[in-house]
Length: 163
Image (cartoon, rainbow, N blue to C red):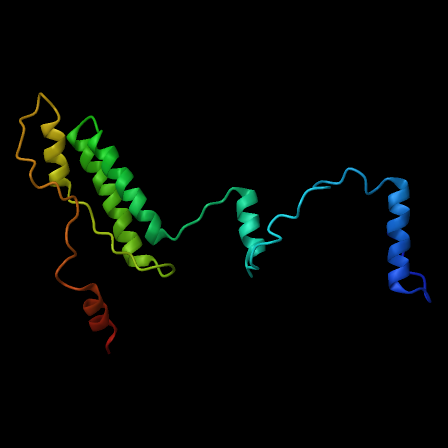
């Protein structure tokens, strides 16, 4: 099947001859996908179809860090609320806050991030209220987000860039 096309023979007849030989020898029997419809045949064409197919086959799910940080934040708050000690709770909140600060300051691709750092105090109050051995504090402030700092980072960066 890998022989070179002889000179003077047309491509179409040479290819058809090789296909016929392959059929007679059984090389085209039991091919993968034989008798099945071609996937995506009736769907609109996408320029990145091959990338999406490769990611699907490899089992890779990728979303921009600015979107992934939201799910990480929710998971960290749930983990903090299930912590065994207040120190462990604060450590979990510190880790997610560090991650949020990093994503907010370093991400250049994807949508802009609007995730604020997590204020540990309302979570600590809820955590204490759910523990019978700890005194229950007023847990009315259940907001876990702190507003962004009043001094804008872009002003500082702009000031530092000027000669």
